[in-house]
Image 1: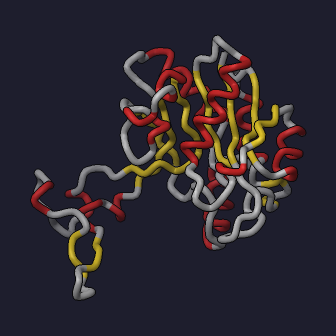
Image 2 (image 1 turned 30 degrees about the horizontal axis):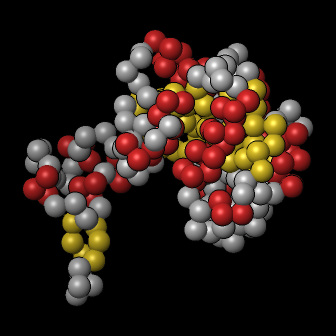
Length: 240
């Protein structure tokens, strides 16, 4: 049994209404719901939220409602704890749960094809704990990252001594730099039994993580400037 869960809280302060705002005639959270509902492998859809509005949109796609408890619905709550809560809720109903497809209400950058490809990767490689979507952002390679010292001066965020290769200003000299783009995580549910054993910082992904590279420009929407980037991504992927 393969289930999908879409996660989102109501009452966003950074970008109010981001989960249900309209982009190209659909609410942002509808795009991942459509992708999951079209997958040839996903058997059942769920929505984990504290918001009646978000839950109602989920119902349009036959999502079962996982009511997020108060302690997982505030600004200090971690997504990984909401994921574990949803996992245990679904597991009680489905003892044969194999994979959990995790999507976000504010991340429309996911396709049915990526979901099916990720599930097939897990089926074909038992060493993988999960498959996630990523984008390549070599311009943000760790060699280029800076932070401030006690004097407010910029210093390398990562000491150059940890890099095996020569550090130069040539972007091509860096190893490929991938970032999770928020589109999806598909995880073997055993990896969610005790996430304290998993790789930081996104411990719901397990330890051995496969990836599907997507176009840059997608991602979860938290700031107004990302809206135009998402529109470009949806057009480039022929979703709209």
